[in-house]
Image 1 (cartoon, rainbow, N blue to C red):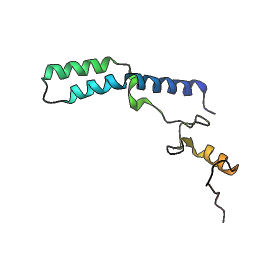
Image 2: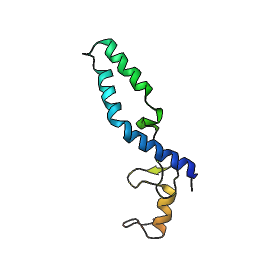
Image 3: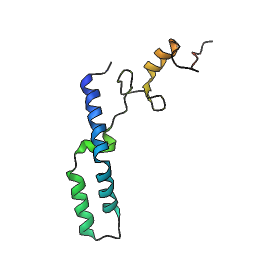
Image 4: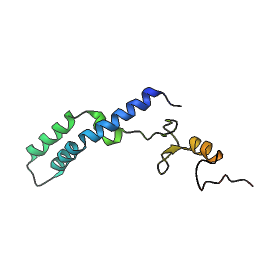
Length: 101
């Protein structure tokens, strides 16, 4: 099980990303629009830099929803390989068959 503080911090980042998504998107559109004057684009970049760093989408860390483990994460299942194997061995994931030979 991961540290609760790390899991909670990641949830806070997710909340901030959701909160500032529209504003960040608008500012990025202005900053990247080459038809606008340079001063206006530069001002948009400055406003973008004033937003909280944790409101950036790239700050989110994918974590297992079962254990909170940050590595070996399967996006489709939203869990780590260890949790997948554990639940699969217990027969709690439909269609998953443990291979043996």
